[in-house]
Image 1 (spheres, one colour):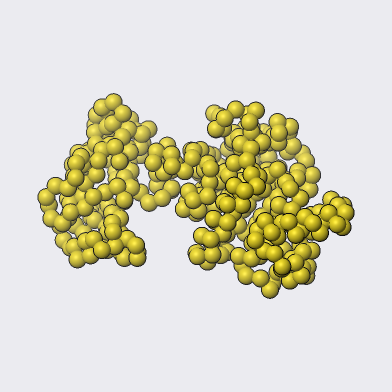
Image 2 (image 1 turned 120 degrees about the horizontal axis):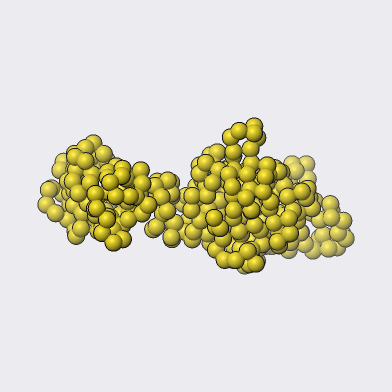
Length: 365
């Protein structure tokens, strides 16, 4: 199955039938076919052990595929050593040389390539300006904050002007506020210089914020490859629906198909309607509905149009700009609702929830 957005002619990197195993039995990456478009920001997203980092390491040359081939500009390069691939790499732990100054760290890839002293000086200054860190050339990494060290690592990856920059959980060691700031800086830098970036993370919000496209990995395979909005609004299956963003997943069974919608029986609760995903009539299914798509009212009276259920409010979590409410349904399944922070702050007991049929999707269980 091809997973490219366009044709292979437009791709800068192409994984073709890539498999990776360490023990000859279990496959860490299984039959990976993926084309990366020139100049795009592609994120490999997935839980630990899903194969995303192994795929990145094979592209960098630190791991070898067990089978298949990786192409750069339509030329096979799986056999090339890492230093000949001309690919920039940014790690989570920065990987800066502590005994070297910032300038020496950034200059190192250029010295390995035997560039002239004046050219090195010019490129180091340009790289520091690019990541908005002028004037720190002579300082040691230990004298910088975590965010500054990560910028230095990014400058080092960009200084020799590679066609591709790989990033493996580069913001994982930063606190939340700094992490969010760096997300925007990396995205803005990508838009300014147009280099192809391939980014690995397990953070769904980070992927949605930064990416042109996202490849969701699970069990060594790509479950879905799409732009962030499509991934969030139209997940391909129950795994993607449950992994990307918050989602209510209610167990049930499809009783009838009606065009692009289906009637779903939720045992002990009632009948609802939803968009039809990959579920089949008569089979166990999972109904996915985003917390922000659910309307809520106090008491047992109907709310909104479409589906309506009644349950008991069992938990309220204040999140600052919003409140998260947990409602237990008659079959003991729980629905989470997100609403404004000032709404339903004193609600308790019996409540009603409702949502439009097109806001839910039913998948194979």
